[in-house]
Length: 118
Image (cartoon, rainbow, N blue to C red; front, side, top):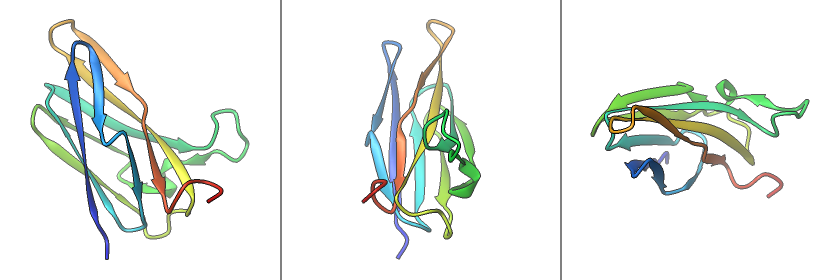
């Protein structure tokens, strides 16, 4: 039975915190992102080391690969039913800090079907 995971993104003092910091999801699960800041985005990048010849594109695992919203808003991605098991997918969170005018970033992971090699 597919599950929905809630990821809460908080911006405070030019620092992003994410709770939980990492999600371990299964095929068909949904990950819902919510943020307290004015403008935010989540972009899934890829799986594997950046310089690896086996690096996989994020569209193999999640749909859509990018979501965004405004303060208090939420948006969801779904882990594809054919996403590779035992993979760790990098994503980037970008949040606009109204006070400083800067874009603050953080790069957590989503693990599909257990840790790689597990």
